[in-house]
Image (tube, one colour):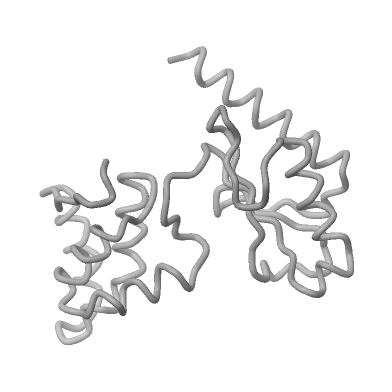
Length: 173
């Protein structure tokens, strides 16, 4: 899908309507995060064109939708790898090797921070606080699974496990 084009399908509009119905009629904009998640699930990221469609649907300025998309790192503004690895590098995690964990992953996978591996499997990013400072270094896989106490050995195991999972899934298809 081109980032210039986004057409709201009937199925997606139905999902938007279910989310909007959860709020008073004059507070449709409250459904913005849910609508962004729906689009991301549908196309894999949130394009500028889809932000404009969401803004029009919710009756809010496009910049207000863009502000939400750019504030939260759970919304991808471009196509990412199959596995998005967000490593916390805020100060408490920095003091407990968060940056070293990020550097190790980047080196192991041969990418710069924010980059995606050539095979499209992994995108490695730093993230804001994940709320698990005592468990640092921590990372979040695909915005869903928190991994704590990620030593270099545990990071290597995680990458190997995710690669094996991807290979098994590809073999089934």
